[in-house]
Every structure is written in C-alpha cells, then in structure tokens.
Length: 119
Image (cartoon, rainbow, N blue to C red):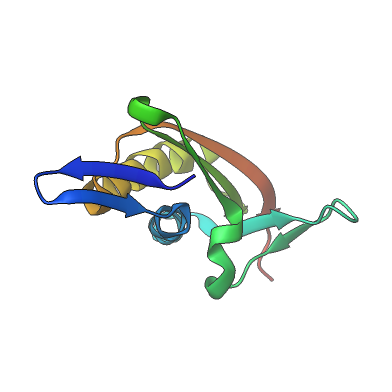
C-alpha cells in the first residue's frame, strides 16, 4: 500500500517501490554488505541480486501513522562483524529514507541470508 503525505500543497503519494529502492541503495553503501538477497520459493535457495533488481531484497510495510517497517534481506562479506554491520545499516537506511521521502521509519528488520567468501 503506497504511503500518503498530506501537506499545504495537497496529497503526495509515494509508492513502496520508491522507498524500497532508496533503502536498497542506502544498504549497498554500507561497509560489509555484498548485496541484497532474494529467496527462491521453488527451491529455497538464496540468490545474490543484481543492482537493477535490488528492490526484491527489500520489503516495505506501511503501519499507518506509526510509520513504515523496512525488511532488508542481505548477504554479508566473510570475516566482518555482523553486529557492527547491522548497526551501521539501521542508522544509514533510517536516515536516508526519512531524509529523502519524509516518512518516519518505525522499525528496520535485518535478515542475513548468507555470507560471501571471495577467492
């Protein structure tokens, strides 16, 4: 369901796809994030998403006046501190979404779907 903001100029409707793209791009800027992940329903495997389909790893839920909930499905780099990555990710995504769109981010859920080991 798209988010709606009422101001002195009228009603502004923001599609969840836009918010998902902003959150996904902000997440990709964080240290230790290799990429966004999508789970295949058919076989249950996790796939690393390309940049053009980054929004498939982000789920936006509108909670009415309370704000929005952002679910991020990520793949992290091997050897990094996942707790530090999560802290950085939460603050970066919350700031970018609230600054860009003007919607309050109530909650950010992070799902680490995999670890990537570079050769």
